[in-house]
Image (tube, rainbow, N blue to C red):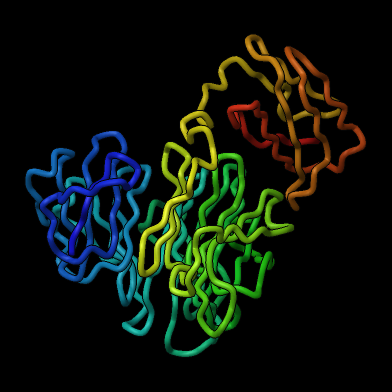
Length: 355
């Protein structure tokens, strides 16, 4: 029992000195400080794991998120607590009551925070569902899917928000392209417990097999239009009762329920490859009217895909180099999303406005 560390893709495991039951883990990727949460509060350790220090928060922890401004969100039965540096003080910023539990957090590319909640009072609107914060967790507002048992949240690089439900008013995975104001279903015949969106926007969902439904891991490479079950190796029924999935930096996909499983090979060459510098590629002008230019000074064999806010492809070009001109005079005015990628993954992905 406790928090263990593997440095060889799960082949062997080492103790970290944190020997208590662990409900949530978060890492400051800059400093390497690790935060662990359990039924007694939040603890932090330096990267060497030589000692653990308890923060000001000393109550039950169900979920945590290390925010881009260095705040820490703590989700528990009853609401959300906000810890601010140096984490020796904090305050409860969302109060829901002890019948509601925070199951998940995520932050999108615009810095908007989301919380996924399950309510065991009833299935009425404004209980459970999704809440959002536009001020790094200081205040929260209801954002839809009331009465759904929201277990997982995730965002892609274009700002699309995904929510997974395992009960209540509905099950499955739902998406929003307007920061949680409106929601649409993608797949509604599975009990979703976890969501991972890869750097190339491939979606993975982990599913429970409760009530005889199909458990395991599904994958979509077309923004959720179609799904492929990738359960090879998850032989037993207990193996397919998935509670969580994780994509490592070297491209392996992990899933866990009663046991921990790893994909037999990396699903991507490396997550790091999808974070290449975009300095050599320019897209201009933005906003655009009749046309815009894609210019590359040091790349070849590039691909570009442009979608509208509904995720529909409006333009795609493969294996180009240096410069291309894209005519958009016939496109309806509005916001579009482009991603430029090569064999190693996404190099640049942003929004473009067509006036």
